[in-house]
Image (cartoon, rainbow, N blue to C red; front, top):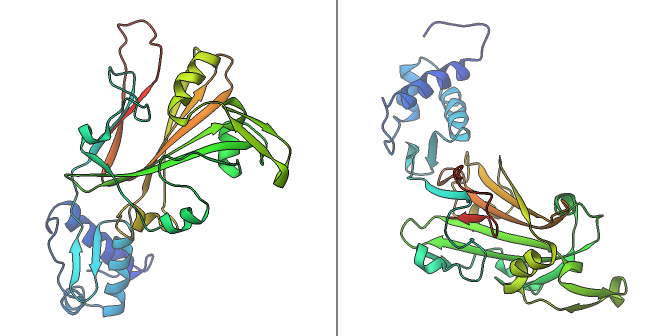
Length: 280
């Protein structure tokens, strides 16, 4: 390997190893040669090799198993999350049966923290909308919203997703008072939210966006993700009233190496009505 004074040696080695991995010189799941061998191969020091390997691990190409070695990261089969208007029940509608799609509810490490807030899977918690939640719902921070969540695990692949939903509270409940004196009288059951919003504020429209971000906090463990180099796939669908007011938004978080998103549409049919399906 020739000297290049314009770039760090570890970066040059990382480039060469990356090429070998992408061209399948090292197969998925195969162990990389040890640091001592690579240091000799590239005529450099072990700390330099270690830095190059750390770079590739951060890119998601390698997995470092302490005490076992460094391995080329396998590419798992991705499961599709479909959005659009197919003839199937919506993901969060009462008629959707996760078991038929081979999903089951699971308990995750962060459940203990949620239990302190007295919220359980599929229960409805009235809470204040803050940060990005308030921004998406186009309300001022501190406005009331109804929060629901669930974690599902696929029985065959063991891949996990996180589902959550926020509904503007004043649409499904009567709220009086402020702060500690606030009283909430719900007049719609959680399982009826979507049908009620469609009747009261429809015909509704939907916008769907997809973005990625790096996981934080307990997300890695909750979703069973690789601790380094795996982006979080975030699919967000917002329900809009006939006048364009946000009513609710549903969000799916999924490991970016286990899922991908596709949109389904039928250009030969009239504009559909009803729920826009998010199917996994």
